[in-house]
Length: 65
Image 1 (spheres, rainbow, N blue to C red):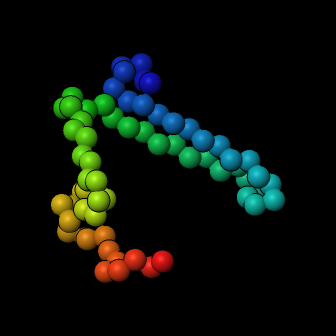
Image 2 (tube, one colour):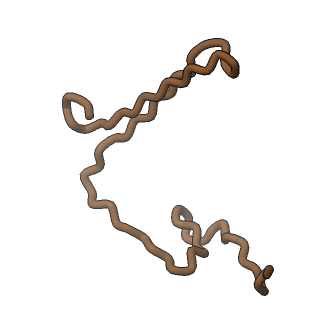
Image 3 (cartoon, one colour):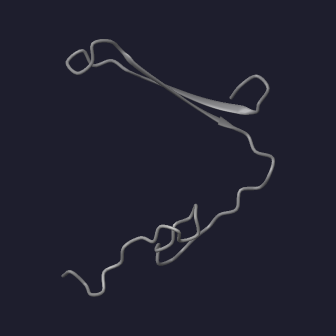
């Protein structure tokens, strides 16, 4: 958590000389939002959360077993 408590930062370093020439550093930052985060649950798991089914998830017409 940052000093102003508005940003969360995760830092990852991968050191694998057999794979990389130098250490691999990755940083991800998240900003705090003031709005409540609403949980979305779909029992069938067949809707695209971000675009409200703009990109439908493929579904089988019959079981594959």
